[in-house]
Image (cartoon, rainbow, N blue to C red; front, side):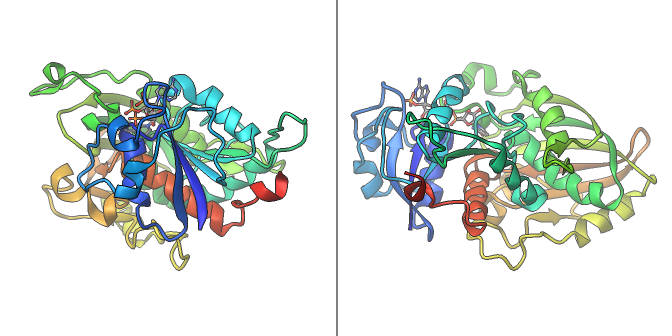
Length: 358
Ligand code: NAP
């Protein structure tokens, strides 16, 4: 087993890490880290547990540590608030940890993989461009890998097969994003109930920039050459618990029909098929003909929250083809996606080197 710490363990994403890692065959939680408000308290007191499954007793008894903790661990999953993630994740990488993060701080760093294993596993090679050094000035062996914003992951899972088959020239996306995407306690109930808020700070830019990096290729000198797709986004917070829904219109090279697009999505084969990654769902991309689907209530938990569902594929008078995509924001879009990233890193021999470097 590889020993892991969770940074930001008390938050919405941190708790999802705790739930998903319970009984995980590769990773064992040995350290839970949060702010000074939580440090020193047993996890069951520090975290306001909002998961649908009961908290494991062993984890509930662990005493939360501050950001200066130095656990005997190889890997740190980060669900830290972005206001602190930049400095804290860099510090942990300098101290030799592999940091697998959900925070936005390093996603667009040219040396940091922004990773969806089914989409751009080869971007792992960017790790070799990082140079984290310990207090002694020697390479620490640590690195940072990130996963995309919770709304970008669903969009890119749907666009990747289309980019490969035709080439994405332009996409316009309108999101309907769940409340859990705002963390805990998140949006005030009086703002959220029976309402739609057409503003999520920074989100529209992330959909544009992250999509281009994720669909990019590695150039001759190992850097990411971003895809040229033009992406425009409008983001809305809606009163749904979990699951980001997105209405997408795309312009594809060669102007394929909706039927061609449905065929390309259905015939796409995950590059992870046949690889033994415990969190990889049997069906990463589900295409449905049900005219009322996908819906958060009925589809968000498919594949343990790791399946992305596409429906309502139709011809579009504006950009060519349109569809709706749904993904689970705290699982596929956060903790589950990060765990899958770590499983891929493990399979590629990138984890467990801390002891060698020390
Ligand atoms: P959250 O519920 O607000 O949790 C934030 C976590 O950060 C808590 O554990 C908190 O600890 C910790 N923290 C805050 N200030 C700290 C400090 N000064 N020092 C150390 N720890 C500190 O937020 P979240 O929704 O889980 O999101 C966590 C990260 O994941 C964010 O960067 C977010 O953008 C990203 N993300 C979230 C989602 C989603 O769907 N929610 C999806 C993708 C990415 P205390 O409890 O001790 O304050």
